[in-house]
Image (cartoon, rainbow, N blue to C red; front, top):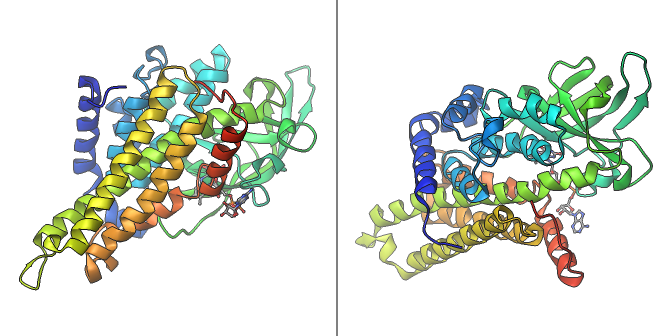
Amino acid sequence: MNFEATEIQSQLSDLAKKFVRNEIFPVVENDEHEEKFRPELIQKLGDLGLTGIPVSEDLEGAGLGYQEYARVIEELAVGSAAYAVSVAVTGLPQAILSKYGTEAQKKKYIPRLASGKAIGAFSLSEAGAGSDAGSLRTSAVLHRSPSGDYYVVNGTKLWTTQADIAETIILMARTGGPGPKGVSAFILEKGMPGLKMGKREKKMGMGISHTMEVVLENVKIPIENRISDEGDGFKVAMVALDSGRITIASTAVGVARGALEVALSHAKTREQFGKPISEFQGVSFMLADMATLLDCSRMLVQRAAWLKDNGKPFSTEAAMAKVFATDAAMKITTDAVQILGGSGYTQEFPVERYMREAKVLQIVEGTNQIQRHVIGRNLVSPRTGSNS
Ligand SMILES: Cc1cc2nc3c(=O)[nH]c(=O)nc-3n(C[C@H](O)[C@H](O)[C@H](O)COP(=O)(O)OP(=O)(O)OC[C@H]3O[C@@H](n4cnc5c(N)ncnc54)[C@H](O)[C@@H]3O)c2cc1C
């Protein structure tokens, strides 16, 4: 593993940084208040080649890896965690279908997602099935028909990021008995009769990001929209959860970096007792700890990404990166608010937004308690884990 960015990695980071400067920074604070998401920004990111980085070029991706993907997500998150998460979530159907999709499914869905023409979503959680996702109750019942077999799907999903603006949603529903083995994965398409949006959550942070209740009333899903075999839902979901942990960890690195940059600049210019506050050891030690945590986080992310890119098991390392980077982001953003003093608590500065964004990253893609459970379980009984 090389610590120096390759030329292409530097170019991608620069491209994302410029995008954040020109397109996200000018609107992010206002849009956060108005809870306004701009889908056209995803299309622009697609035009720059940043929405399908790890997908093969024949499917309109960039044909690169998670090391590149993680760097781009970090840059986007410096601007707004909501857009970083949006790109990461649109990456989930791409990752799933790249691995488990049929040729027809890959060709039909991946190119529009990889090129930013369409937004994607991943719908697993329900009111009664959060950390214990294997207990989900949304049902999919197979019907045989001479004009083509189909599933009839009924249930209510919660917390589906950008479901209302997504063209392609990966849906987990029960086709068999209780527990994870009874769950199958499907492709839901925007506009399918019976697919309705429920409430949009009012959240503590990431107001830009739409978090939706999804209501499924007798939705007919053709059998060709099932991913892999019946009962493979959790195997399929693990692709999203393992690789998603790398992108959520990169989002945390970006959020933490944004907060540290603001705190550092403030500490160097804000004077009290006749000198910049950065000259007080109490402040400089905080900055030192923030920078150290940030670098450790990025290294864990890059290690997990390197393992994935090189076809090695990375499940434990992705969980470690997710838990460490998101806990670090919570600490770094909280300390950034402290370093700005009263100003840090106001909406004049972005550090309070970064702090609210960091909090949700400890919850999504498997809470940090669940990550520790994954790491602990894999330590006690080592498993090969997923390797692509
Ligand atoms: C903004 C946002 C966006 C989201 N986007 C999506 C999405 O796009 N798709 C999707 O499917 N879901 C999404 N989620 C849902 C998210 O994945 C769940 O909120 C998360 O998995 C936790 O589930 P829960 O909220 O039901 O909490 P619970 O599972 O009820 O957990 C409550 C608390 O108990 C702890 N806990 C639970 N079980 C254990 C255990 N065995 N050991 C130790 N502690 C435990 C948890 O860590 C947590 O602290 C989103 C959530 C949010 C807030």
